[in-house]
Each structure stands twice: as structure tokens, then as C-alpha cells.
Image (cartoon, helix red, strand yellow):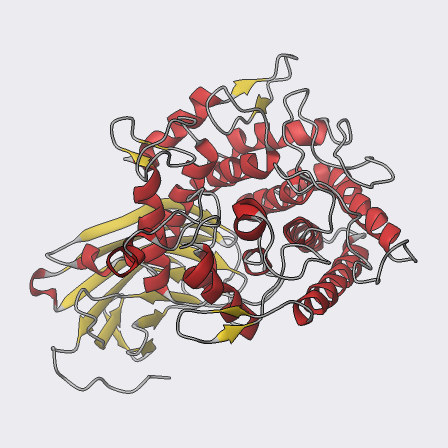
Length: 501
């Protein structure tokens, strides 16, 4: 229901620019918000995932047209090429706006494959990347009162609603993701500047990793609930330990090292970060909502930030292939913010979970929630296409049927539908892959309601041994078009076969 309603909320909330251009200003919370680019990009990206590319492009072009026309608070030497301006509708002292827009422009190409559009806007992307590279050179030389840990970072500037000038972790990680994506897409169309951008983006990443690891080694460990102590990445350089308030420490904290791909989600650092969030930051004021009866409520009230559907802290679990953690976080955040009577997501539950006196509709948070719902069925990354990776097991119980259609991915447009047979002994997945690029891998997962492993599989009516009864993944790499995968499960109590080649 929310998936259907969300588009109407966006169309009601957004408005044409008053200059007659036909471009659309993205508001992120009814009429009370301007163009907060960090959140507007979530809205635009979700429109692209639906295939509403014209709507997405009319919003993206606002930032291109007004590139460099508005200033951000920071120790920057110029604003030539910086994304923030939105024809007077820009809002928020968020230095990370720029990196978000770079990423969103690159994702638009990845989800559309529109090389003509990308070639046209390439000068804007190059100017945006060069602004980053030019500004970070301002920190490569000797600076007063500095230990040099910030070498190669963006100059100190505002975080977001927190406007103190520091070398913020999230701002730099998100900005790196933007230039990394721009380098990737320009390489895809053979742009002559792409090799230079790749070298610059990789050098930026190396400087960030060095700086963050330097700070981590000098920061006190944090204690987990099982008695372990793990390293901690402060939200900014030159901060030892926790920062002040939930925005700095949680919303803009070290989980962005994982959501941006700066650190691999399976690396040891990821475990430290995620365990600290789950054990401490999501569950304790001032960083999370209070849990009065911890033993009774930790499971149902944990796993989300104070703005539950804004922080994508659940996505690293999908990359780590830990679907149960992903699903717990998804449903807890959803229930904290969903208002059934208006079929909408709110921003901050207040004064209690499930209620809010803040913005209705909060379209950026809705866009996240809907995108995360879609990711249960279709998750695409540089490693390939994953179907049903985090599908709730209960949805395939009692002859269950579920699926999604017309999902745009970096490889093309895909549909998937799961149907469970009576008795729960088999499930059929029907795929339609309209691919324009070959994924490195295509895996179809079958999450049986009782956790039963696969016993036998047929693809388009022909038996195959390309399945893993441990993960219940079926490998259909190399296929395209319409595919039918019939999965039969081991009887309860049977000994599963070993993994197949």
C-alpha cells in the first residue's frame, strides 16, 4: 500500500520551479521543506528504481542548472562546480549535499543506461569531481595546529543540522562515494577524463582510510553487551571517543564507512561498527530511543536510529548476507514510523514510537523504506543480481505468493514472482530478465518458511545441480529473458546434501 501511495506523496510534495523551465524542485517533507539534497537524492533514486526516469531527470537537472550558485559553510576556497544550488529552494548547511548529488547523477545513468544523457551532463560531473579534488588539496600541506591526520580530506566544514566545522567522517565518505561513482560511469562511456578521475578517486580513498585508521587507533575501545571491547571510529577526526548527540554519533557516524563502500561490509572493521550500533547506539539515550524494559523490548525496539527510516544502517547486513538482521531492522523501523490512517511514513516518532507531530509526508524516509522493501526481492551490486536474498520466510507459507515487477537495476529491468505449492514442499520463482549488461552472477534464493534446505531444482523444466543447499541459492548466471526455477525442499529432519558445484 505504501509502495503505491509513495509516488502520489512525491507528486503532491514537489513543485515546478517558477522559472518556466519545467524542472521540478524536490521537497522532502510536504511543503515545510526545501530542497535538502542529501534527502532529495533518496527520492530521486527511488523514482529511478521504479522506471520513472523522466521524473527523476527533471529533479536532477535542477542541481545541474544551478551548480555552483549557492555556498556552503566551510573552509573552502571556491564553489565553482559544487552541487547545492536549487534556484533558491536549496536548504541545509550540509557539506555532504555535493557528494550525494554526484552519486545520484551516476546512479541515474546506471539505472537507465542513457549514454546520450550522460555524455551531455559529463562536463557538469567533471566540474563536480574537480571541485572535490581541488578542495582536498588545501589540506595536503602544513596546517596550523594540525597533526596532519586530515591530509587529503575536504577542508573542515559544517556537518548538517550540526554546523560546527570539523573533518567529518560521513561528509568525506559520502563525497568519496560520489566521485567514485562518477569515475565508474564516465569510464563506462569511454570518456577521456575517466582514467584521471579514477586515479584521483582512489587517491582520495587512500587518504581517507589512512586518516580514519589513524583516529581509530587513538580512540578508546567501546564495550559490547557480551563483555567484548571493540575499536571505535569517531564521527570526526581529532575526537577521542563518543561525540555529542545522536546526529553526530549515530546518523552521521561510522556506519557510513560501510554504506558508502569505503570499507567492505565483510571486513573486520564492519563487525566492530555494526555490533557497536546494535548493542549501544540504537538502544541507549541520548543516541537512541529509551528501552525501559530491556529484556522484554530489546528485539522489538532496537536496530534503528532516532530518525528510523533515514539511516541505511540495515543495508550492510544485506551485503554481508545476514538477512535476519536486515529484516529485524527493516520491520522495526517501518513500524516505528508508519501511519496507517494516512498511509505514510513520518520523520521522527514523537512523543512515542508509531506517532509523530512532525512532517507528513516525509518523502525521503518513505523512499528509503520502499527501496529497502524492494531490496528484499531484488538486490543488485557490482557483484551481481540477487533475487529473494532477504525475503521474509513467512511470505512463502500457506501457498504464499509475492513478487515485484519492473525494477530497474544497473544490469537492466527485472521481474520476480515466488509461488509456494500446497504443503510447503516446493516453491517456484518466475523471473523476467530484460538485461542490457551481463551480471557477474545471478542467484535466486528460496527461504523456506521452516528453514528447509533445497533438495532438487529445475530451471525451465530441466534438472540442474547449480544450487547451494546451505544458502538455498540457485545459480542462473548467463541466462536472460523469462526463467522458471522450481525448487523442491528436503523433508523435515532429513540430512541435507552437501554444496553443489
